[in-house]
Amino acid sequence: MSESASPNQLPPVAKSFFSFCKKCDADRYHTVIAHTTATSAKLKCEVCGASSTYSLKAKSSAAKKVGGPKRLVGEALRRSNHNAEYESLMASAAHPEVTYNMKGKFEKNQKVSHPKFGLGVVKESFNDKVEVVFADEVKSLVHNRA
Image (cartoon, rainbow, N blue to C red; front, side, top):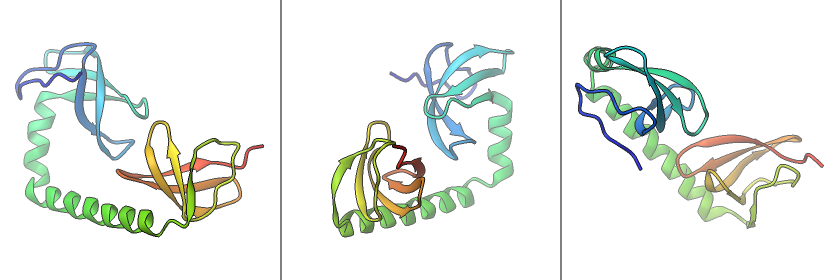
């Protein structure tokens, strides 16, 4: 499914490529739309549809600027905190699991099965939207749209 490019070579056009999505704020698969120059390519996130530019030079210089290990430690800590929250909500979910539908109404601590994001738990429920904690992220979804 995915192709991996060497560090000094652009990924092939029309193939999936694993890269960081700024809009999703997570590592996601992107489809390579086109090679814009010899060192950059136009990408489209397969989850949110955001377009971005992947550059060979920018990636290596950005890794030097960020400081590498500090960023990785911060991301690992954030992921472990999220995983702990997800596991505790899954264990304490009182309501039975239901399939997500924007017309349905969901309550706090209800398990929701979403066709794209998987199994999650409602963290907060508002009149027209719910905040659902999934295994890899927290999403705001609309509900109660009869």
